[in-house]
Length: 473
Picture (cartoon, rainbow, N blue to C red):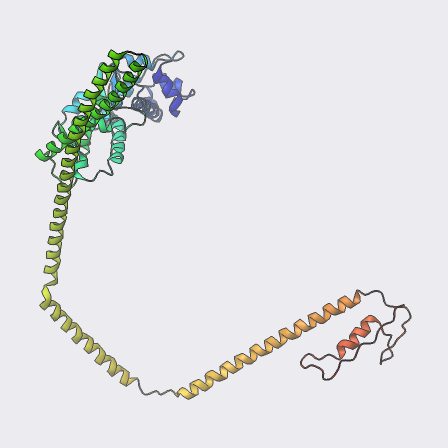
């Protein structure tokens, strides 16, 4: 099984085993017999080929895999061949449908186009719609079914996905110096960061730059210099842009050279040490001599790089000053316009005078209305007396409610104590003591005698009498 087919089976839900017989069959008659099934199969193939190309699994003649383009050849058919179902019989129809709808665009046509691919015309109406219209008037129409051979097509969906990744990667590049690149520097900066785990090929970068500049309006380029476009900037590359791009490319190259020379110095130092350990004087001296030359070149590169970094800092500062002046100019114009709308201090004084006059008239009208309604006089003393009476009545209600609550609590306490006395034991069969009413003196009657003398509101005067004891049996 090829890598392309294995990728589709492992990563695309449309290529599950139950769907493979339908996808590999000749489903061209379904265009009229079962339009929904036909569209589902075509969509599954287009989506699968797009995702496989984006992941780098599409066959290619170039050494590096292309992610934004697809080569239509016998190699593609062989890569999709299955031991059980053979080659997909309707793949030509799928590709013709994709070409007709603009989801795939021949590479030469894409590169030579002068207007945006999103600008539709009658010539770009999908063949499925045009064929349906022609069939309604008794004619046949639609894309062919033959397999396109030996051509490279641009996959629009993949382009849009990489464009989204580019927008995210450049969202924090706001300074003009950060948004200008030479073409080589641009590729080195973004070739490995736009696709996770993948690197864009030379062909991919050419297609991407064309798409972002012509169709998305994100980039401005003259072929050698690329600038990430800002809405306030011109749509052309200036000499300043080219100079900044050259400076950044030179700084990047010097940085790379210093890294190489640093590794070279370390390697020569290790070689000299190894030669000394082996008692090889000639090799040790040669390694030390080469090390000195490398260190001298490294110092020169660092000095040049430091100078270029100073120049770059000054350029960035000057660019920031240009933006600051633009903002100040815009702010000055806005203030001038607002001050013109205000009309100056004389106009403001006149407006305030009119405002005071109108407010005075309102006050006069209010005073007249107040005089008309001033006949009814309210005695404040009567109001206060009535208010105090309401308060006294409310306090009385609260006191009564509190008294009721207190009596309820005392009654509950009495019931609780009686219950505790009832737990002392059974009533004796022959009482030995009687109370004043000639009743047998039991624990219950004794407690009743005690509580009968208690008063809820006032405490009893004098000493309390000790209750009669109940002798034990």
